[in-house]
Every structure is written in structure tokens, then in C-alpha cells.
Image (tube, rainbow, N blue to C red; front, side, top):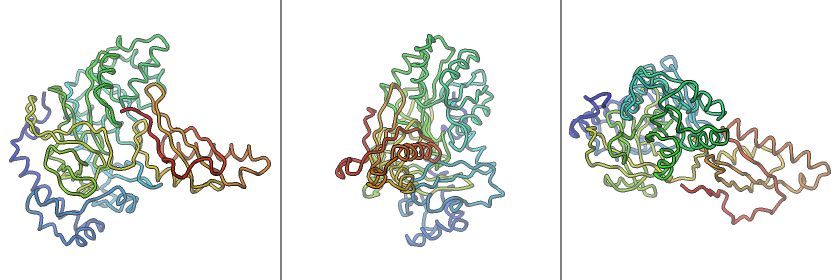
Length: 432
């Protein structure tokens, strides 16, 4: 099944022509409405008129996560706030979030892309979808929700959390589709086993998973445990959210990128050089139809490879391999993007701490864990009554990590000079 045959099966030359037309339009718009892009283009000595084809896109400067933070909250918006009907946000590289706006048309576009993705997974209006992606400022939950309603499927807006309650709803409501992070699905299976629920007896037939790295071994485990077909969904909150690319049922060897809405490039992450299609590199995205905050040549940090071979499903849009690596130091913990600089921003605000810390990321069962060790200064450590003071600081760090970054951490304060300066600040013990 194909949701929008006209656009999803376009000949390649028609896709390229449409991309060039839409690219010229969006460049004119951002140059005249977004101060950051005017300054950026002028500094690179390039004007929108200089971009005659998609091949010319390499003349344009990149947009980075730092640029998003530097223009917090609405500095990259190309429309007035009275045209923005929705705001979402994700973590930035510093303590500030990156903020994304949506016009009414953007919401329609996003819903349409999710609808395409769901239909690619064989989902119809007869399905009931258990949506366990987080609702709120995170784009996952609401993005999936609106797209599911677009195809007239029934939606359970479950969000994340409480595994036992999730299992009760899965049993009682009988959904046929689950949308979540892969680790959350495996966690549900583990909890189900511990309380006597075999998740294979549920009515689920399809799972759509994303927001964190996973490989074919994890896919095989999910499919075996649940007895379902597990498919991969890709999206970036910065660009629009989930639904930028989706795996189809044919072959399951990559996700179709919706090229009528996005231009994708692969670059050498060290040099910025554009690589030939098919070579592994960092993915760079340009939005063609986003109204509220278009992004030009946004460096995703995700390492992947584009697949240009024709797909048996009939869709003509290029595919991307599953993302397993990053070009930067970002961690993905239970679907949440976390930068070491964000942890540092939290620690530097707390009196009595030294700037020396170590983060260890691991797994307990299917779920990610984060342990944080931080050195305290001599005064705090040597003060009488310091145990209470140390406990207060630990509690403050735990609370700030949860409030500002949306993650749970186990925190341990250690005496000065416990952590060697040469030790890695980030140790990721997970095996992807």
C-alpha cells in the first residue's frame, strides 16, 4: 500500500526538479525573514539566486545545533508568532533547549508524513495504535498521534512510563500496533514475563520503533518475543519530528526519505565535503516545505549511508540505512538526546562541586542507565556535618538532571582527586 502515490512514486528526475523549485523558494524566504540566514549567506558570499539546482546546495553554509541554541527561543522562525500554532523543544548542546515552531500547514504536512509512514507499515483504519512515545515537548507522541488519526486509525495516547499499566492497557484495549523506542518494548516484555504475561498473546501485529539506535539483533529479539513485524521510523525534532523516513514492508533494508519535503546529503563529518551517494557519512537535511522554522543544510550528527537501488515497493525516494553512529558526543538515553555539555551546565551551577566528573552509561535489562560521579571540593568534603550537605547536593543533581534533561541518573559524590584527569568523561558500556 502507498498513501500518496503521486508523490511517493515520482520519477527521479521529477523529484529533483520539484526539489530545486522548492529549494529556491525556501531560500528566498529565509534570506528575507530570518536574520541568522541573511548573515550566514552573506558571510559565505552566496545569494539565493546563486542556487540554480540541487547540485548548487553545497555552496550554502551549514546550520548546526549550536546555531539553534544561539538563536533560542524563536530567532530562527520565519513567520510571526501569531502564525505558530504549536511549539516543541528538545535538548540543545548547552543548558538551553532548541525550540521548533509549527504553522497550521506544518502540522498538516507532518501528519501527512506520518500517514505515509504508517501505510508503509501496512497499517489501516482498522488498526488500533498503542502510542508509547512521549507526549509533551518531545515530538514523538503527538507526531504519531496526528498521523494515525489522518488514516482514521484508533489511537491510544499512552505515552511512556508505568510498564504494568501499559501492559494492562495492551491486554484490555487489544491494540494491533505499538509505537515506542525498541528498549521500551523489550522492557515491557521483561516486566510482562515477571508478572505472568506473555506479550506474544497480545493482539499486536506490527511495531514501529525509533528515537534510539537499534540493530537487527534487537529487531529479531522484539519480533521473536512479541510475534510481530518490527519496522524502523526516523525523524529529527529539529527538522520536523518523526516521519522524515520510514522502512517499508518490502525488503526492510532501509528507510525511504520523503524527498519531496527534504533534501538529504551525506558529508564527511571532519571536512564538510559532500560525499557521493552510497558512501557512509553524516546526514545533512534541508527542509523544503517547513513554514515556521525552515532549516538549511542542518548537520544531524547521524552517521548513515544512502541507498539508491530501486525498491520493490514502488516508492522512488532514496533510502537511508539505520543510524548506529554519531559524529559528535551526543548520547541517546531512553530516546532522550543528552550532551556532556548539558551535564556540565547543570554541575557548574551547583556550589561545592569540582569540574571533574565521569558519566557511565549502561543497560540493566532492556533499559539504559546513567551513573554520574562528581568530585566535590575540599571544603565540602571536610566540613563537619558534610554527609547531610553531600546528600542535598546529590538530590539537587538528580532533580536538575530530571527537570532539565528529562533523564534519571544515579549520582555519587566523591572526594577531590578521585577521578583521574586523563580518564574519559563519558563511558558508554552499551553494546549496540
